Image 1: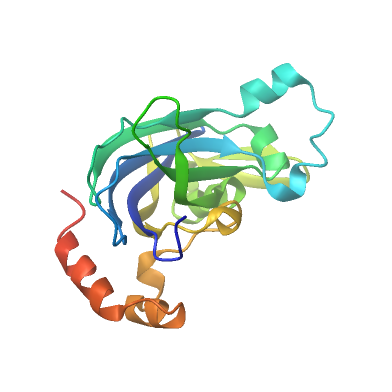
Image 2 (image 1 turned 45 degrees about the horizontal axis):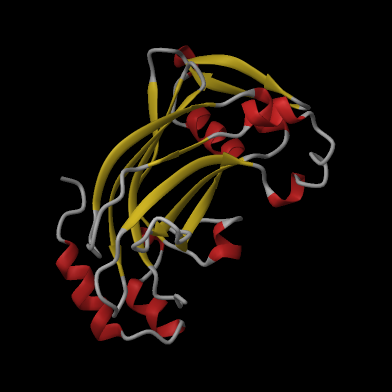
Length: 215
């Protein structure tokens, strides 16, 4: 139903020394020509596509502990929704050994309880990459040794919180959303919409109407 002009979701991601990932879902801006939609955000730890075959025969109870998800309260009839909710996830060695990802998805909630929510778009973040980023953003005195698989890394100490990402991320179509992310500040937004055949005039209006996303 939805094309490439999906929208942007504003986030903040932090990791602490007790292996806790904090995900703050802030607000969004949907690039839709339709009437305002009702939506919610799902945040989850999920397996990477490359590890699915490897995990096929893993114990069911282990999988239930390894993968978990949270959802925001829905925001009704608003293409610039404000969520402002925070979720926490504990990162384990198993997550890193299997290359698991943090998945964030926006769903459209149609009227009527019997209707299944429809994916608008989403993104994925590598847990391994986030741990490495936390290492780079702390000094040796703030780190503790963290070993997993054939790799070794360091996490910040328990009382240290490292901000990994803050800003807007494009809502990608389903297949891309399973593997990657696309930060707003990494590209020229106008060039992005020109490349995918979008309307730059509409885009510019939408961008200016967002104002300051961090309230």
